[in-house]
Image (cartoon, rainbow, N blue to C red):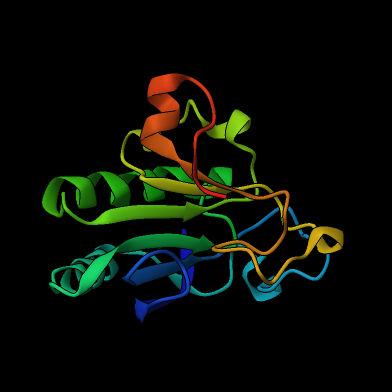
Length: 163
């Protein structure tokens, strides 16, 4: 898996100050995508153990609320194994840090993936330019949902984290 950058402290990709891992690779190719430079899974920097240590070092700061996986699409099949490994390690070593993930896949397509056990919030669905709404929190178009992952898994239905 490749990544394009790591933000050390973002306040626009989830609650609080967050580390954001911007991964490469997306097959959705949404019209007027905000990050088309992330589509090519071969672009960017190969993720390795040093990258993981860098992320953990950033997460160790008391003012950091958690991590957000974005891109590209962290749940592109080529990215899933490494994203799940990162998520698992963060949950183990930083259990108080929340984990958010943006994906173009719908909840119904991804809810059974093992990574869901570790995530707190998923923003699902492709960006749809005709449903663009800059007033929405944490998403770009009205078809996308901000899902409370753990409540949704327990109740076996989509529970929104926010409207």
